[in-house]
Length: 512
Image (tube, helix red, strand yellow):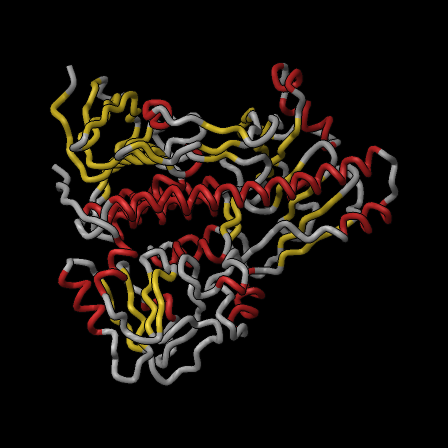
């Protein structure tokens, strides 16, 4: 028999990057949630992830940027992308990503506001998971239940009832919630229960990922490095002597993968003792995206909604999903927004996933072009010249094209206020009205918002030079630090502006 139902405003399935950050985003807005995760703890091995400057800005809002930095690579070290005929050969070409410290100095000297206020972070995926799990456990608004597996979902007009198995107690639990977020990975149970299907965007590119320890290999290059060779992509230097190898395989090879140590020796030419294998994962490499990110009160985020070709990094897309979904659900729970705002989640985040997939496709095309050159017998000079014509595929900032800065739906230009604070550090968890008018003429809009229960922080700005792309004297910025509306004067109809940026409203209940 199921135990008596638990109740929560928002239930999240999965405590990976997307699930953890959605819960933390909800808590940032004062909304309680329950997170169910089938694993007992963070993964023992996970791919290294490069978190862009823009995503670090979003994590900074949650107090996580400074907390994560010590677990990342040395900020004084650049990252080298090495293109080589074989693992044991000298690289034909090296793309160097400047160190985080160097980029921080470069960003500080950028006057147009397009640079992020945080540089990128390269961090072990396992270390990231540990930090996020700790953040969940210490937050009073988040109830993390590990070894709880979601098995069924039922929805009606009033809410969602999810059936969960508590593996430790051996019982079934029903959790009633206003909204359910499926952040439970590529094989999402939530997606299946909601009847949401995946659209395949390309043919499978199966590969095997091997996490292993090799002090000799990790110390082969002076900086953290990603080696791209014809039969392997190898990442080293991100976490001591831990190395990660992505090994493309055929469908037949994938079915018959035997000794991973032998596979590594064959692809990497490792001499001496066999490497210490930490973890092995077989992946289909099928790029896909959910045809819909939502059905009623059930939403998808992270890899439950999209998977890209490997070996590429989806962490920025997952972070964007979490923030974009979290603040919208919080708005609905707090009864100042509703359907139009919730509907905007799919439109924005699905489009972003498609754009990210296009970047991944181009990166894969560059790799395949390189492989064709190797197979044709091209020498290192020819390969270097051909690769040199390709633009590097790694954007450590990801703040968007300069032409979009300040437009509604995009990031506002960054600048420092008169007291020296970054603009982004003064934006509230709610909407913020940046007011450059001499007489603080934004008050009618603020009053209209407060009369409707819409939280808006008023931020008067005087005495500082503004970036050329700053879009107006009155700029309303969303909780996810995107411009919602801008003008030079107070609108004639404040209600219409608020309708545009928030939508309708409804009331929900608390954790019990």
